[in-house]
Image 1 (cartoon, rainbow, N blue to C red):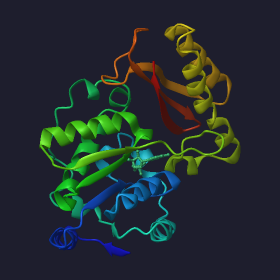
Image 2: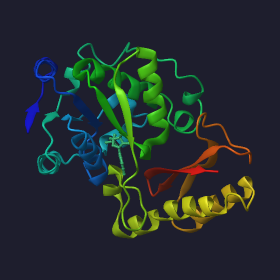
Image 3: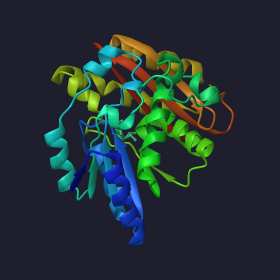
Length: 281
Ligand code: AMP
């Protein structure tokens, strides 16, 4: 695997791929890699794409400085995992490579309602930061395919909107959420949980499953109240939201016939976890 630190070098390499008629699959990450990240890479490899992974902990998407400071960094292990998975290129830039003119006065993107709800509301500025980094990465990598995880459901919607706004030719592929045996969605942030907390964190999956099983039977508001109480009684210190939303708009769903997604964001100690489940009615 080639490890590249500079945008210019990566652009040259991508031009070579294009010259050779090879299509590229791009997997942007913030590192502390786990099977979820690797599943995206494997999907790209299954499509016979040249695979480019990026590890960059993007400062502009953190609305909480402590969260940024505490973000896990495990580069040697990440490199090992990527090599084992057969990744072709790792892009490992410094902050100045991504933001050569600093992180002030970066573009602003019209994300509409997506920025007002759920993660947009609880993490002000977060999705602007996501768009700033993805825009820059798309300019450097010019991928044919961009691989994202459903684990970050709203982020997938934001990036799809960004791609439309930019009129980018990159095609988005969304991979299902990889889970631990307990059902806990794999996440870099899980590394900050103790063994005990990790066990408790599986309650998020339990409530999502419970919502899925009872969705035609119990009214939405009762499902949401019971899920919230369950989390609070089972080790979560704070619940930002449990919502059953329309899967296209992320607005609260009524009980009508549509595809919905149940989404949860909650804290165990000071670690904030998110997860979701798409439910076809
Ligand atoms: P992150 O490093 O958390 O920014 O995630 C990088 C990419 O991996 C994003 O597209 C995530 O949605 C995806 N991802 C994170 N966790 C999982 C998971 N458990 N299963 C599948 N994809 C994931």
